[in-house]
Length: 253
Image 1: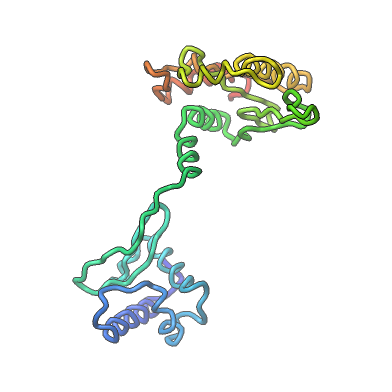
Image 2: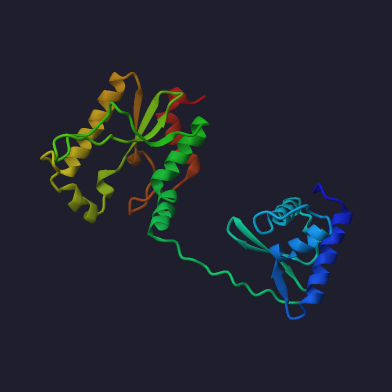
C-alpha cells in the first residue's frame, strides 16, 4: 500500500474530474498538467521536474497493483518506460509517442547483447556466481608496436575475475568463420604477419604473460558447444552449462 491515504486519492480523483470539466474538448491529458491543482489541494507541497512527485506516486501504485484507486489514470508503456496520462471515461487514448529506430551504435549494442559470445559470458557469470570484467586489460599485456614505432595497444581478455585471479578467452571454431572474415584474416598487419597469425600470436602471448603473472588462463573453445550448420550456438543452456562446468571445475562449487 502506498504511503498516501484514501483521502489523498480522493483529492487526486477530484482534481482529475475538475480538469476534464474545465477542458471539455480534451479526452486525455498528461499527468504533469494536474500538479498545480494537487499543490493547491495540499496533496504535494511543490512540483519537481514537471510532475515527478505525481509520477512517483503513480509508479508506486502500479508496482503494488493499486492503480484502480485512481480510475482515470492511463499508463502508456514503451519497454521499461511509462508515460502517465489521465483518460476521460469511455474515451479512446491516441498515442502521440513517436517510435524512434535505434541508431547504428544502439543496433550494434543490441547485436552484441544477443551474440553467442555474450550468451556464453553470461552463463559463466551465472556458474561462478559473480560478474566478470568484459574485455579486461592489463598494463603489462600489450600488442606489437604500432606503425609509429612508439605506442602499443593493450590486449583485451574476454573475461577476467579479479577475486579468482582467473582469465578466460573464447576461442572461435576456425571451420565456422565466414568467407568475408577469412579474407580479412589473410590481410597482412603492421607486424608483417597475417591477422590470423597475429591472432594466434596474441593468444599465446596472453597465455604466457598472464601465467607468468600468476593468473590462471583458461580457453573456452566454441567447438566444445553444440552448433548448427551455420556455426551458431544451439543454446541448450543445460548442456552448455555442463560443458562450462567441466572446463571450470576448479572454480565451481
